[in-house]
Length: 256
Image 1 (tube, helix red, strand yellow):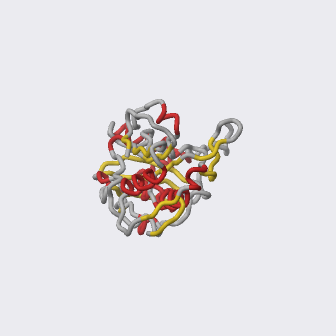
Image 2 (cartoon, one colour; image 1 turned 30 degrees about the horizontal axis):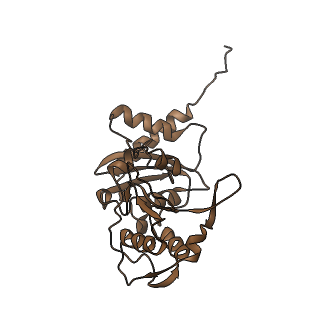
Image 3 (cartoon, one colour; image 1 turned 60 degrees about the vertical axis):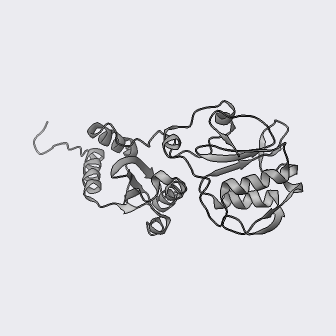
């Protein structure tokens, strides 16, 4: 190479990862609670979740669904799961500029190399949404996270306003109030696919009287099912509750 000239390539991804790991490891954790996560900026970055002091989840966000949204969703998901009450904490770092590197994957690899038990919630179903009918009807076993930390449908709360409403209205309100999935039968299109937001005609025709609070989800679902009659069945799983016009056993579900 000629005199007076040199080439220099700065390894930005490696430097960013090293700086970020050092920052994360030096941080104190905060409690994963809705009142706390609302104070986190809605920004792109990375975050970690800790259960009983152990790193169990690593995540990355972008500007559209930022740190506040993601952490608030996780804080809501762990509600009504007794094994997780008060036991989950977080660290979050806002990153002003992202590189093309996959920070989430790199951090998971780093911490798993240090400890085989790290980031155990990644890939366990923790970040998943509604598991859908396929898992239920094929009697698939609950995924790791839900199997280890199932929901509790016997927690007392003020889920619904007392009074008489249609079953469809009661279910819609209960669905909005719960930190886990409540799915119920809807109308179907010509291809047989469920139509979201279009409850089954029976749910619109029947009324239910909601008793004074406090309630449990188990009690409310039993009250609703009684109004619908024996053709309807409510079933609770480790991760969610369903209500369908059916009469069938589920290997991993409990009929209410």
